[in-house]
Amino acid sequence: DLHSFPTRRSSDLGYLWLFGGMAWDSTGTDNDINDLWRYDLAKGDWTWMKGSNEILAGGKYGTFRTPDPGNTPGARSEAVSWIDPSGALWFFGGEGQIEEKATWGLFNDLWRWQDGVKPTGTILVNNNRSVTNNAKVTLSLTWSDGTDDGSGVVRMKFSNDAVTWTAWEPLAATKAWTMLPGDGYKTVRVMYRDKAGNNSPVYHDYIRLDTSPPTGSIIINGGAASTTSRNVSLGLAWNDGTGSGVSRMRFSIDGSHWSAWEMPVTPRSYTLPATPQYYTVRVQYLDAGNNYSPVYNDYIKLVAP
Image (cartoon, rainbow, N blue to C red; front, side, top):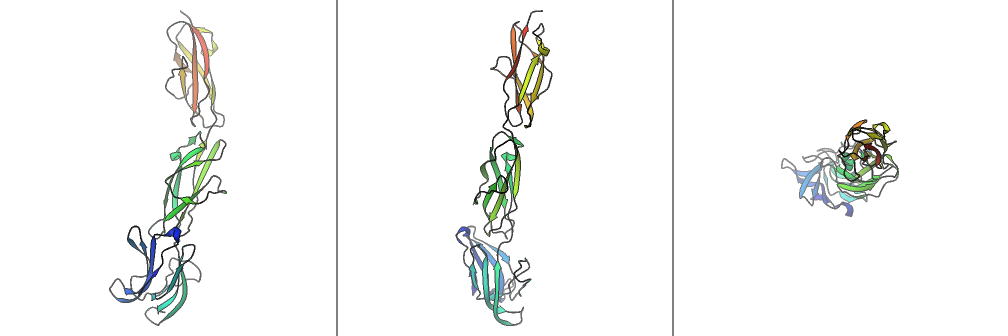
């Protein structure tokens, strides 16, 4: 005389619920029980969710209309059950022990069971990079609904400002996202929802948006018109305003072939080609957001000693 709850509403299909009835307990004794089980149709696994593993277990009623993990309906059979639009399991009445192993009769108590475990999760913007020059980023996402008590995470939603949120959408480990325009620190937020309708806390990650290129200058040998030595000194200056900061510089003698990127430092020694003539030395700066400056240059004449 087992009494089973029906499968859940269409958005939550995948579980069969079974509560109480007349059956054998863990010791092989036959009578009314109060254990609640969940069967995963996809995995073929049973999970013991609530109740005793012995017959004739008494109810723990707690405070009226107040959820509590310690609340448990007593052992019974022939209860009436249904599932509401939120996915909560309800049952009413039934026949069993009104008091533990004492009076036999009919119940008129109404119970509701719903997953009360809030999901958890994480979010990373551009794999935890600190700065980007593009408002279009990639979000890396993880989620969990805890132990088997959870009903399973099924949806997620996002916000740039914690006020306006996207619609709930199916889960994905990565998501393309566009941040709000304008340079500065940007925070992206995510919330997760499980099958029972529990919402996670808001999780967030931030990244600096820097779309402005740096500026700079170069002067050879303090602005001298000529030199008899191939080894010259480059006076360099750079500025990234309120941006992420200049992190690299590189040089070219012909505008086509460039040196490797290096840490910015001034002054910086530089060797001109051997042939006496005018030479133009070019410099370009790069900031932490991967923004390139314009090419700056200065020239000097190499003369024979």
